[in-house]
Structures are given as C-alpha cells and as structure tokens.
Length: 316
Figure 1 (tube, helix red, strand yellow):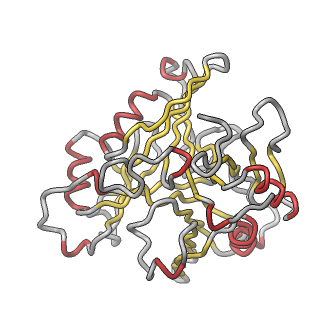
Figure 2 (cartoon, rainbow, N blue to C red; figure 1 turned 90 degrees about the vertical axis):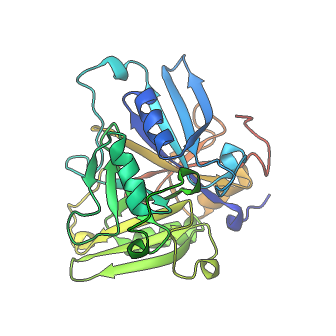
C-alpha cells in the first residue's frame, strides 16, 4: 500500500450558505456549473458542488473528485427562512481566519462591470484605493470573492467583453499565525509545492501560494491556475502566545474546510499518521468511512477523500 503526493489535488473549499438557490445563482453568474449534489435529508443538509466546466475550462467533464478548483456550498435546512441567520465571512472578529476565494478572469474591467450590472455588491471595486488590478465582489452571504486577471489589466481597459467560460477558481485564502509551521505542514505533510511568494515588509505581511502543480510549470504567474491555497501571514502573530485564528467551524460559523483528493485514501491516511498529524476525524471514526479530516497548525480542517478516477471507493 503506497501513496504518491504528486497525484493529490486541492479539490475544493467549503462554505456554509444561508440560501443555496441565491448562492448557486451568484456563482453561476460567475461562470460556474453545478457538477454534483449530495442530499442528506436525514441529517437535514445538502451539499452542492460547483466548478468551471466549459470546453475552455481546466477540467471539462471530469468527475468532481478528479478536479482542482471546486466550490462546495453546504446548506443546513431551514436557514433560508430564518431572518436571524447569518454566516461569518472570516474577515472580522470573532470569526477572523478565512479570508476569501479568488476567481481569475480574462478581461477584468469587463468582468467586474458584468458583476455590477447584475446587481451584485463589491467590498472593493477596481477603482478603489491604490490597487487597481484587483477587486472583491460580495456573494449573497457576504463572503469576499477576489477578482484577478490572467492578463495585464492595463491592456484590457478598453475591452468590453468577457467570457465566463474562461474563468478559473484560482485560490482560497486563509490567515496563518506562524508561516514557517504552516508552510512545513502544507509542503512536507500534505505534499504541496510553494509556487509563489509575495513579501510586503512595508505593510508587514507576506503571501504564500501553494498547490499541487509543479513549480517549474508556473513561471511566476499563478493566475491561470486552479486549486491554489494562499496563506496570509501578518508579521508578529507567531510571537504572540495568545493569538489565534478562527477555524470557521465553531461559532460563528462560515468557512468549513479545504479538501484534498488522493490516489489511495487508506495509504494517504497511513502516511499522515506516520507524519504525526492531528486528526479531527480518522477514517475509522463514526459511520462515514470514506472521509477523514486532518487539522493544520491553526486548526483549519483539511478533508481527505478518494479521487474516484484513480480508485473507486465511495461512488458519489
């Protein structure tokens, strides 16, 4: 029994949503397609999986577990009719931890205009502030959706068309307390590659982009890729013994987890055991024997499931 981390994929990120139909409509407007739906009526929740699935996407027609850049929306029954229900978007205390998901687009000015014309709000428009090459849209629950461009934004100012079928679910951002510990975990334990680093000493933070891509294939430009993890480290947090980020799974809830699909689930979990990981759920815990959850150094949940193309197991 063996496992090869080069075959792993950063498959999806999970967000809890109040009203799935409103959320699905928003992400479909961004060009995504619902590629799977897992209903759990006995447990009173549903899971919706969305991804880019056009002929121009990175993985058209692939099984949901054999992709990078999937968004899982979790809906707990009844929240849509509860006027008091809200989620924590991860960007304010006491729920600060998860930051955003990011979509890369072809022509960013036209893409942002299309979002605004549909009536959706922005946390930051392109013209706001000094950073004129990124924007942050707000989804129906207030989660931040960063919009970046695969092209030079200065060269697309006069372009009026955009093709959502060419978009990519580029990355998920989480804040980390100790960058060295987190980088070691995601590289050495989870098998990811560090693809790009952005150091910002003037603003006292660094960004680290990791994923299951070969570093030699990136050439410094990560915008066209899917399935990346962005770690944001604010200087000094590692030295504060009282400092903690919120994992999203205790109150107030919002972000749930990231998920890695693997070539052999049993072998991968055995390898994680040998690496001395902290478990939220082992494969043998409970009734769900096709799912495990590892805890990263900040307590974020990392789901581990089987890539069904490489080895059939759960048939979901």
